[in-house]
Length: 579
Image (cartoon, rainbow, N blue to C red):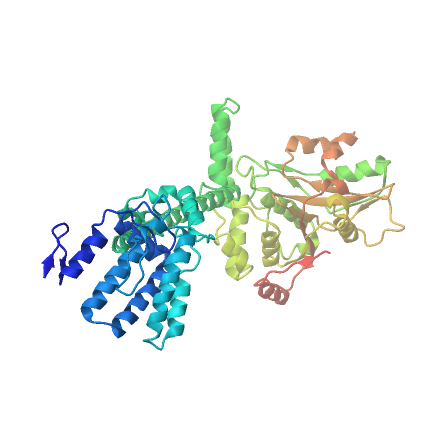
């Protein structure tokens, strides 16, 4: 074994060492045998041939293996192969083997390079002679011809793939178009570059690229885990915020509901702030403090109130009597714009006092209605030995009616308790109380307007029919025996004591309002009553525009059996609806 003193490579024989020195360490210029590329060293030329002329070089190697497998000894074959490889790769002018013709130095041009024409005219001709000699020793002529046809095809650019007609044009193309690539060091040219598909980083090794991508994947996996944890925390925070918001909203709704409920309790007298007695005393004390009432007057009124509450009878301090008689005289002597008028039976007017101001209208209207019934002999048996009760007594009477079984739903709404409160009462409580006293009555509900602009002409017509059984042929003033009518609407109640039919055929109600003080009602008792005094009594169709009106009309006396039947019917309270 022989070792090269220059590079240290080991070879088996002297011919091999000579071939090695000639091929590897020669000083002559290396020229590509396929495209005549020059100006590079041997290793660069080998890289060029492997990349640009891979197919031609492969065919050459196959051809050499054919020759090696069929001809000559191993040494001759090795020498011939090395010599042929050196001639092909370096372009020096020596024979491939002892049988290969040589190219003389005189056949070279002045620049010492082989041109494409010379290569085809000299090298190719001698090579073909050599092939013909080889064909006599082998039966693979077609394979060899195809090998050489492929080896000596027109040159192709190793960088862009462009095909030129000759090697000179290809050399010019490469030097002009790809000069920057020719200046690149061999180790850079020989390296394949790999782009990271995730960040675009260029790697020189596939394994480095794989490790780099794995880092990306680990980072992405870690980031996804962090994101999942963050998303979970965000979800928990969002749920907590939503729950807190819902809790605050429910708390606010509960607070508002409680405030509204307390407001309604105060409005309807169910706030446990005391009843008639407490309010009476408190308001009188205010009057004393303001100097509007003398202390002696305060004590006198207090004593009268305590006596009234003790016997359960109204003290009459808010009552005005004789108004219906005064109205009858007025309509007979005046009221030229009235065609006819129907008046109820005698009624006493009761107005609110310090003890029930703001909530006692229902009780005061019941006192007016009862004062009329007490003057009518028809109801004497039902109201035997009864006087007009005070407000606390009326509350006690309604509670007794509830205990008998009347209107259990209404009783439940008012907590089955009225005494000691300022609870409002309406048409249902008036009906319950009258029925418990065996007074026959009915509730009619005008639940929606029956005329333009929210008016209720049907209400006026019903009241007219209640008072006027026969309209034609009746006198101008009709003083009927009919009791007054309890009229309820949202927030207030009044008592209807008559109805006018005016000369223009319009109707006008005459009502007693508990809010009207005694000094105003006293003006109706004067002999020379003024028309302006009636203004507080008259209510035309256009004056009643509440959404709903209910009336309680008395119609007679109930028997014991009828009272029981009405009590049973009141378990599910219903009213007659118009329309």
